[in-house]
Amino acid sequence: CASKSVSCCCCFSFVSCMCVSRSSRQLRNAAFVLWWNVRICSMVHISLHGEMRLRSHILAGVVDMVQRKALLHPVEPFEVSAEEIEGHPVLAATAQLAREDEERDKEREAETMAACKRANERPLIAREDVASRRPLRVCSDIELIYTHLTNPLFTCIPEDSKEHADIVWWNAPLKPSDLQPGQVCNQILNEECVTFKNRLVATVQNFFGFRPSFMPLTYDLTSQLPLFLQEHARREEEEEDNHWLIKPWNLGRSKEMVVTKDADVVVRMAHTGPKLACKYIHRPVLYNKRKFDLRYIVLVRSTSPLEIASHRMFWIRLGNNRFIVSPDNLGDYETHFTVMNYSKHHLTQLLYTDFIAEFERQYPHLKWSEIQKRIDAMHRDVFRAAVAAPPPLGMEGENRFARGLYGTDLMLEWTEEGNQSDCRPVLLEVNFSPDCIRACSKEYDPEFYNNVFCTLFLNEHEYSDTYSAPRKAFDMI
Image (cartoon, rainbow, N blue to C red; front, top):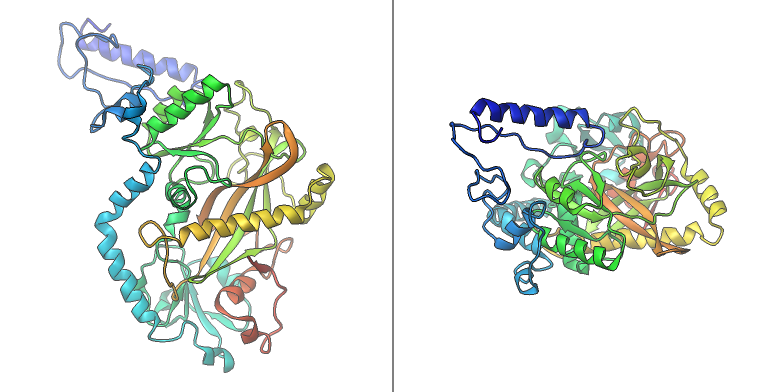
């Protein structure tokens, strides 16, 4: 068809589309291209190695030769010398991040200075308010807080009365300039250095090196694709596991995530938007032979000095099928993913207390108290990295006007191949303003928001003599 009329080219494209749709089960995650000629050509060579070629949208705007070779890997195998790779340092993602934020540095610096000035005009939480038993006024755009914040030391005011609040607990983005003098909010300046997936990787790698022990090996495909292909080829040659999880920079609930060991698929996925390639955890600790991950709630009371707390409870998310990695089931969502509560898949409800008891029964040589210590250490390491650098790379500095509540997702991985004697936590992501509906349930912690607000905004001696303190739900770590 390529050498005939324009109509034939259009017909060729339509047939291609039909072929993909007929085999959609096999090519569900495939990327494909349709084209139409804009003028009649007597001859158009479609051969990939022909002398005449149409415009390449794959390479549009890409000037770096190593990156161009990497993007053409599905057509021509990626081969570069060590000298060529030197142009792509290990922390290329961090360098790119700094370049992207350079234009916003002055604006952020002005915001920070203004916020610090306002914070110093009045104590963070007026101590006389607690002593006089005046409830601290809380304004929020989250309905759950109005129904579950019942501690008499706090009172909720209407959402449109934000200027009269002591505490502004907001889900929508806030700037320090949006706050009145003396107000406190739940958004720490530049917290996206941990809540954006690509920024989290850059933050941790910048502090701990390219391969931190508590995170999967990760490459940012927008800047580190050549490094990924080099590592992929090394693993193939040395016969190491080569499965990868491809995920977007900033989508949740397992959207647009793909498990694959095919480098061509990874390169094509890089064309569908900014993506990360994370080494797939192929030897996870299982629960009743199913994959699981854990959601923790972590509070940041202060960034200087660093003060963080973790809730004693956590919730478990389980895959529905027996876990096995094989070429035939890489596209099976219920085997490789665990987020079931936002879809039509079966959702398994499991209390953390029941989970711990059954976990120790299945693995009698592992004690959850020891695993919990490692999880606490991992959480502290993440935020140590976050406060180690100033904006835009981190959230170093005194944030007296802000506190943070985050949901962290993690898995447990066997530390050695073929050896189930010990395991370690592996961080998957950090979420801002996580869904806390389950946390507030009677099975988990019906006093959840009371515990959160007392831990973040009050010291124990400030409420112990005015109100019967809630059970100690958060541990400082």
